[in-house]
Image (cartoon, rainbow, N blue to C red; front, top):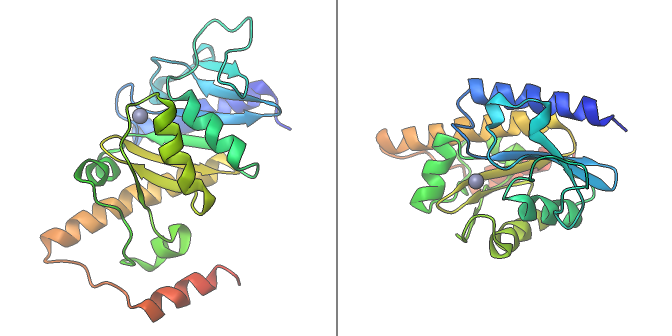
Length: 210
Ligand SMILES: [Zn+2]
């Protein structure tokens, strides 16, 4: 298992990268990492792109900061807790308001058509979870149900969340999903995408098992 300090360094490093790539504007979004029977999560009011070690809080699986922590966990802690409880295989969660994915989230449009082979392979569909007020139990419930079958989901009128067992993989999926959203938006300008057929989609999904 990684030490707390190693995990903090990873969150800082990938947070910076997300900031540089405009995947996490301003103080939006939050990140967390499973740490044994606890969770390390960005503190409330911090910016993913500009974190330092004081901005990462240790909390339990009820979303309470461990005594001695000086900051409060992100207000979206309930969503993080719910995902880790449901999926023991996932170790890291990135929640962002990246512009292209958030455009689809704001327009109420899921990314559920097979338009690009690579995205179909990695995500299947990126569905859209119903809106709920940020930081509420209701929001956590709306999001976590998609983690039965998926590792990423759009959050209506809000943003996007992706999880993985590994932070590099989660980050690369975020980058890929954001560029996918940009591509799909561009296809609207170009008169619409050529949607892959059902057979073509099935053949792509079958590659996952190889
Ligand atoms: Zn958010």
